[in-house]
Image (cartoon, rainbow, N blue to C red; front, side, top):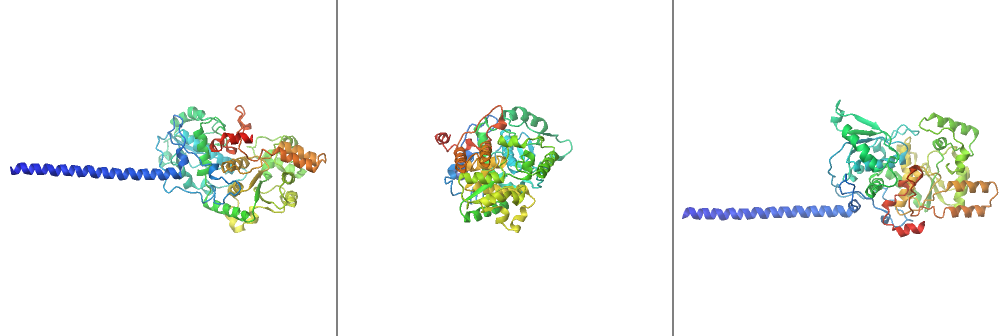
Length: 506
């Protein structure tokens, strides 16, 4: 009897212990689930754009990156110094979760060109790495071009932010692991991808090469991804990289924001991207109003650089076709015709103007409040960036995006990328000069064939719808170099501006 009671009591104890274990497990599970839900809710609220779109192509998972857009910057006339390009851009309270995927290989990239050509290329290379499930190495920057800038990626961009802000999309590393340095471990294939290629080219022709080589080096990266015809998820990822992940270093952003603050203290300001540096004129062959000695110097420079393929150039023909930057003298007349008052504060975003103050004399006479960063900052403040043209260009980029009006005298890479950033920031006014029509009008006016009032009215009319308003990109499938550049008008990332509003501007 005692034995039976003991067994019965032991059974009750075991039953009670079982209930306790189940209760404890349920409690722990509930705590973990609620904790996870709270974390996911926090990340979703702060980084909601990452979670919106669906329908990645078959080789991708369903999570994609989307940039915030103009709705976050509704006031296009009072751009804050603490903007999305400044140091005050918010960071998530916790790291985004790593995207888990089978790595198909390692992509090494050598960017070529100036700051903004490299910037666009980096966006493209991240997008390609994401699409092909690759690991991307921090890109190498161009050190061999005309500017000979020794800056590395980390001297210009915030590496930690770049890696962390994209970790839910693609794995980015600073260097290859040691195993790839062992002799015979793998063969690195170095190649330039085909320009203006669709995602299908990379899937069908490039991905199989990774299965063989594991490490591929793209030795050229400019314009290697199509402007149009890509899945919208890829286009939105390009925007996310450009407007969220590519943040300048704290030192560059702090200095850029100081420039903006100084300019804001004097009120309204215009940024004039006066593309009239020696390298631009030599490369383009545009020598209007240059002396014989200057023409000779520019021609010699053009022949000295073998990668500048076009050598024999007829300057006047190019100018009449609208393919030359406006001269400082022509720019002064255009600004006056557009109605900018004499006391307008104008910040010149450029390198050293060819011909120096002599060529700036007419522009400065028309607009005495012309300033440059060298006039606004002390030598000590600028010294960290001296002899680093790409870092100096980064300062101009920050000021250009933040300005009340942006006017490029030539539609080069900086002009296009800044134009796109200003569209993304709320369609801020960018005067996109029609140089072909302007040259015709300028010649008529300077030849005294056209009076000033008629000239001014004509200039205003041809630019009425060239102020950075919402519009659709021009698509020319057979000639992608001639169609509108994706980074000048990333329309896929501006979906909150409804189609009706875009059409009203056309």
